[in-house]
Length: 536
Image (tube, rainbow, N blue to C red; front, side, top):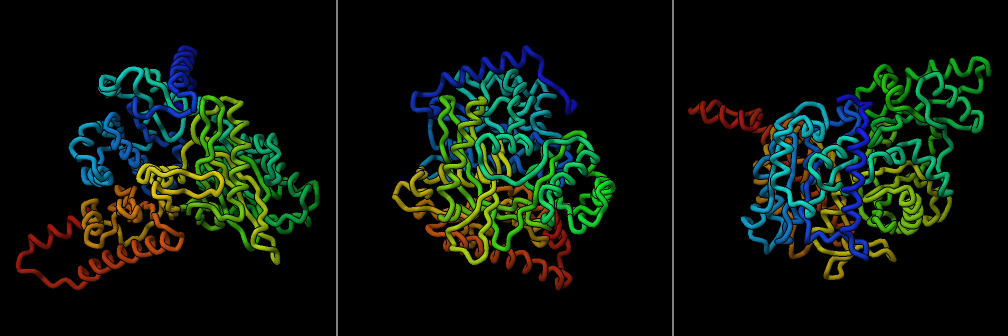
């Protein structure tokens, strides 16, 4: 399956008919009647695979949708979940036990699991499409006109799978994907008259890119740095920083060539990235250049919204993103909600963008990322917001918020930007996909469950505080874990997160130290068995 594949017209027409069927399933209030529908979850990251491989344990990110299992609290819902590799049974048990008052066996009977048994570096959806017998087995368990499909992002592959299964996809038409790219986002921002960094149009080779850098510098000769972005990059992994110091000393007729020479010294945000591999993606993905926003006091907030078939735009949440990498460009996690100094403004800007996307036919979720800068010696409430990009898909802030929402049955309050449980208690959380430590390697899912039970690290359904873990399958090989720590205040959420880290560090480092000083055992078979389980 090639990257330039396009769905045949008959597939497009059938898909549009299915989407019309989905639109008819919405009530006048704009909410899908979830109690009447089964959900097929295809947690495929159908993105550029070369970019994806820069993320440790990315093949396990299919687990991020497991929060969906809490939908099984509704006795009329079935969930069909497909993965590349089978999910560990203890991981499934963990999520099913998050629902108090629901008999485990009753929920488990309504959960249907399928796997492609394929760990290759391709998207899950492509793997499914290559297996017609698997498609037929999935199709046989679906209820016609009573099932819809959800995915991480919508491409021609998800469209084709929707048609083969004859169920609608609750997502935007893949033909609208451009509006979720870097260049597409800039066009939407300009149309909405939303502040965004000075930058370029989309280019497809390094010479044109150097020319755009030169044009940007000529408009802003005081600029110190610029950001080079692959047009379809994500999580900041496709970004690189270019140093513009000394550009003014180069004669104008030599400047573009000299800028091009500087690309080899770009500061890449993805580890192990090189100019050679980066430049090879420009003809395929395209690239833009933007002014780097400087600031001593700088944050990266975001707003998440949902677009209904009626065109209504609903604000779902705001976050302050936690960024890492060499220049603070890579998404690591988030805290909810965003700072009160700008969270209501984020909501207004998100709704403004959502209305334009709705006019273009977009559906379901999107996120809008910003850079917030507070100039020195100004009041704390005075932050300047610059829009950076639109994510026309589910993202790293989707699963933490939906976890909170599904576990508490609470509501987001548009007037305050806070989330309130059914008991009218405001809730806060810190979430991350990147809690990583080499000491955690070798921890099996069952080991984590033991630690959770021993130290009471679970989510408490009575107080509606605690931790929900995800990416559990990443632990053993990569020492990496995801978690959402929910508290009744930002301080409590941080304390819960810090305790998790302290416990995991203590448990794993203690085991490693004990193995370093292990005395010969009178029963070598027992010792070797213990060590092999720790490794694998």
